[in-house]
Every structure is written in C-alpha cells, then in structure tokens.
Image 1 (cartoon, helix red, strand yellow):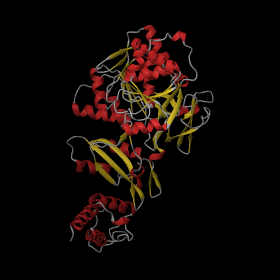
Image 2 (cartoon, chains in turn purple, green):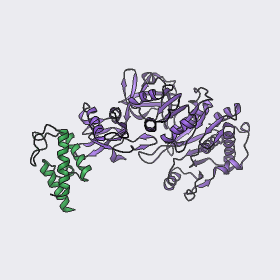
Image 3 (cartoon, chains in turn blue, orange):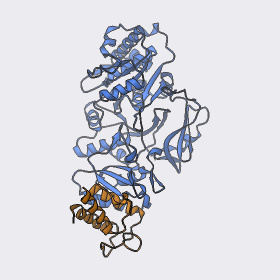
Image 4 (cartoon, chains in turn purple, red):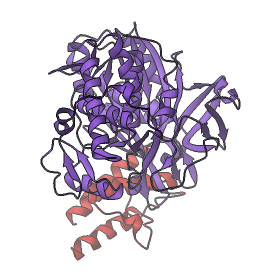
Length: 456
Length: 83
C-alpha cells in the first residue's frame, strides 16, 4: 500500500487522502507518517505488531509503514479488553498500537501511535530496498468459532489494483471496518485511484448517510445489509438523497429487490457488485446492474489470476492473488481450488447466489435456502428488513423462522398476514413458521446472520 | 384451570383458526392430526413453536406426544403443579 500512497504524494502532496468530520489528512502527510512508522520498525527490529486503534489515518499509517518496512501488521476489530487479550495470545503479538488506556495488562507492549510517528525522522524511500516478503495478517470475523488469521502478501494484494482507473475527484465512503478484508480492499482501491477516503465513525449506516450528505461522498461500497439499513434511514428521515455516482455491493448475496431500490434511489449512480473474501481476495466486479455473476466467469482459463467453477451447487475458486495460508498452518497452494461456502444456481446467463452453505436450514430432511425467502418477504409492503434463519424444533429438527423490522407506523397484524400470503405458494418446508417483529436484525460485520439459532 | 392452561388453550385455538380455518369444532378430545384437525408435521412443528413462545415450554418435547387439545392442557397443568 505504501507505493500507492507515495505515487499520489509525489504528484500532488496536498490532495486529501482521508477526510473525517474533524480532520483532513493529505497524501503528503500520510506518507510522511507511514515512513516514520517504517523507520521506527526498522530501528527497533519489530517484525510483527497488532493495531487496536480505529482512527483511519492512524491505521493507514501503521499498515503502510509496516508494508514499507516488511513487518506484518494486523488490525484488530473493536472489542473489549478481554477479547483483545485473547487475540494477543492467539496470534502471539508482543506489540499493540493503540491510544486506549485499558489494554496495558494484556501481555503485549503498548505503543502509542505518536511514539512511532513523532520519534523517528522519515527515511527517504529510495535509500531503503523493497523488503521481501511483505506480509499482512487479516482476521476472520470468528462468527463460526474462534477468529483465524489469514496471511496475505502486499505484492499479491496489489496485483488486483493494476486495473483501477485514476479517480482523483472521487470521494469513497468507508463503510467497513479496517479490520475487515473488505475495508482493506477499499483502502487499496481508493489509494490506487488517488481518490479520497471519507471515514465517519462509527461506521454505521446512520453515520454513513450523514457523511454522504456533509462530506461530499461520491462513491460508496457496502454490504447489501448496510444498503438496506441506509435506504430505511433515508425513508424515515426524509432528508436529501445523496448524489452518488457509484454504488457498490459485496460481502453477501444480494436480495433481488435491493438492486432496483438502489437504482431508483440513486438514478445517477452506476451499480456494481464485487465478489471477494479474506481467503481468496477479490475476483473482480460486475457493473451491469444485474444480480449475480455473469456465467463467463466460469471460462476464464488456466492463465487467469482468479478462476471459478461450480461443484454440487457450491462455488469454488482458484486464486493467485489470495491468501498465503492461515496463521499457524502450512501455506496453501496458489493453484489449488477452494470451496467458497457460497451456494449458487445458474439461471440463464447468470450465476445467482442462494446463500451460505452454513446457512442452509434442514427442515425434516428438506434443505431450505434462506435468501429467496428473505427476498420474497422484503418485497412485502411495510417490511423494512427481514432475516430468515433456522429455529430448532423437536418435530422437524428445524423450522423456518423470520425476524421482521416493520416500517414505522404500519399495522403489524396486517403485515404478518401479508407475509404469510406472500409465502403461501412456497414449498411447505420453506414457509416461515415463526414470525417475530423486532427493532433490528442480528448482524455481524454489516452482514445478516442467518445460521440456525442453536449454532450461534 | 391454571393460568398457563388458559393461555395454552387460547394459543391453540387461535393457531387452529389461522392455519385450519375450516375446522368446525375443536373439543378437548378432538384429534389434532389426520381425521381430526388435520395438522401435518410442519404445522405441528409450528404449533410447538407458538406454545414455546407463549408459555416458555413445549409439550412436543415431552416423552408422550400430545394427541389432543386435552393432552396439551394436561401437560401445562402438570407443569404448573410441579412449579
């Protein structure tokens, strides 16, 4: 990432790299901070460290400085000290970059960001050879168990940025946490384009909408769940609609009606989908505004960095820009195929996502995909958000259960009846058997959690 | 009749009225399945979830599967007596 920052800073050091409601950080000052971090890392012989701070400029300087010095940085998620302590132990980190005062007793030496950015003078990049390797560690969300460390290499990650067009006037919203692989992808895209990152805090749809309106966001990439919440916020507050030029979705399957809602809400915006994951990296984007992937992705051939195939209804990927392997485990073969866990169906010229294999609900031996049911329920008038999941049941093992966030002021009994009517022609096992109205649905990392409740 | 039995009876009658509106009579000894009310396995599963939500316990997890509304009320009467 450091070379992306250096390139823009050499052209236009005063260009804004990161904007928040309180501050603007230029490319020039960001590169200087990153070079100071790199100098401190070399001086102190630090090969690995974790970051438990979430101010975007601090995180970027730490990650870019690590890339310049060949040290392995790892951004932690926002968490209480106990969970941070578990991560420190699990991933054997002996240095922790943070401004927090409650992380001093976790077994890692606390480093204040200023300790590195103030203490060491920047070293001219030309005097330092590019280190090899240049590792980076991304943690999985851990929603299915303990988080795993996904080992990446900056040179591999940067291969996917070669096709990004310059966009110096673009202002990209940061809607992901920087501990997420998707957040890292946004950083790479923004800095490869020489664009500006708009980083509200916290990174919820409400603050995202505010940042779109007040900080001139032109481009935004987020999960479908984030966009659904943001549209609900827009409807409820009645304020001006942001003039977006680009709407990008990724991270989870996209309910069919959502694309149409986004097109009508942001008529000037291009709609794109990205398909990426911590393990296999980015597979590129689809920009035709239609749900799913074009079937041509299955014909990319042996020379492609990323190739795909379908095995028993599940998408498999071979990626040469993906991870090196999991922390503490042997390296993976870059030419090996991996199951993605995404269940798909071919519909005409598209590959449509039907949900995660871990989300399939087994109703008396019948496998039910939650996403098509959510799509149907979400299209019912009066429904702002829906979550379909498996509820354990003594008769059938599980039944299809539904949580609904109703639009303000609607008659819930009428919405309940409308949902049941909308689902009446589904196969019997797929009909929601339990409907609850809730204030919000369960999410993790801005994605809806759909696993059977007993598995959470 | 215990409060839980009253709540259970109300929940079952409301459920049957929704999923089997053609049911003419639901007596305490009317069979819930087959030639009685005619609940299938998924509707029975749904009823068990309704009762669990309403009363916190579910007669379909007990050893003897209830065959009638009367069996369900007996289950909740026993639960109330043991509480």
